Length: 120
Image (cartoon, rainbow, N blue to C red; front, top):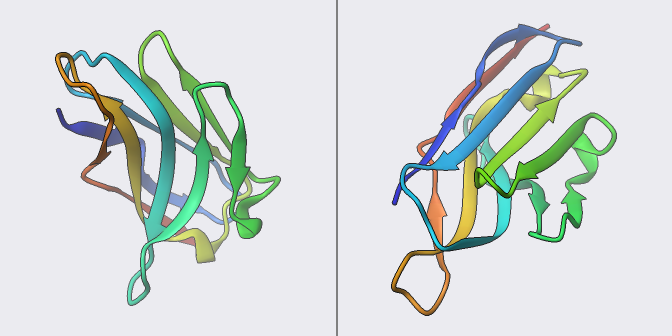
């Protein structure tokens, strides 16, 4: 199983982007899905997470500007990013706790990353 992320790009400050992420193959279930980001020269940080029951939490700096959502039928997670700031520039990674068919437990999976660049 691979997580495939898309939707990154170059946008001016104040603009919007929508990221999406989904597993490459069918899976049994997905618990928590989340987005992380890593800016140049910085450590990867948590951005937003969403449980299967739609309980969301965000890092303070994106609260009110970013919205995380999921389509459980398609096992897809989205990150709507509005009012983007240059400080949001980073590679964004999706993360999910996935139970593969035939497995008894969930394991951690990461997407390949999608670059978001916000110009001032």
